[in-house]
Length: 108
Image 1 (tube, rainbow, N blue to C red):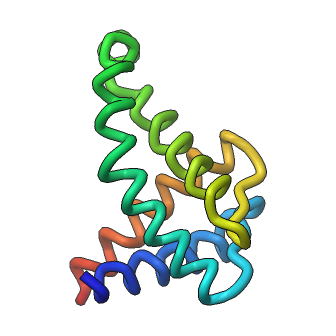
Image 2: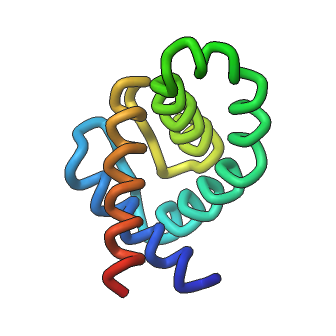
């Protein structure tokens, strides 16, 4: 569990370095941002996905990217020291974060 959290924190730092408009100020902010992001994706995202299922079906699944971006922005709103400048930044950041953490998990 702790290893997955550290990998997520590392992915978040790399995402912040790659995507302009995403900032993580300090190790503790990265740690708590990774923790809150995991909790948000585990609890709130499934509920939100079910509630928006009709629009997700109409957009052939593309609305999931917006949901991921919103979850990224929600995490940034909760954690001080983690900021995202806008919805498009959040969408691209969530894509980069997902790809990076997936790659790091498979590598380790």
